[in-house]
Image 1: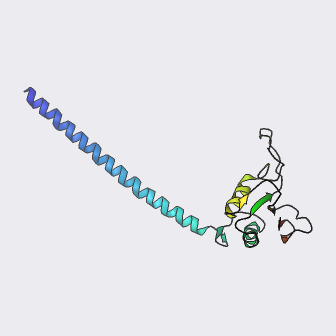
Image 2: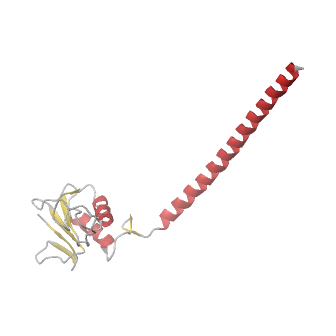
Image 3: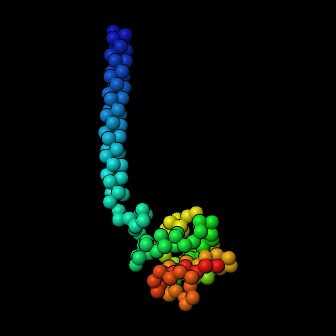
Length: 157
């Protein structure tokens, strides 16, 4: 009699294990299909983003066209210094290590880092010596080498 109960328990264990495996495989298959569909829709959305010169249009006021302008005038091996408008400092912001508005200090950092990325392989530097200066949404001084607009320009070193 005990051997029958033991055999019954073993059979139940095997059945439960098989059911768990089938359930896990089903969940895995459904999750995989959903992930593939999500990835496909994300690719479709990414293709719909407006582009300027092959790059996603993320900047304001002709900034995206200006990136192409800078890339056309500044050699790929050059160093660039980016000057931007100063944003108001929050009370909990750390004290900038350099002058505000230059080198990503106290500026809208998303815009700064997008410009740095878009202008690769040009290196972004903080020093004005020997570097091209990119004026991004700030008044461009007189005598600047390349003027795109009153607030977008590039000065040669």
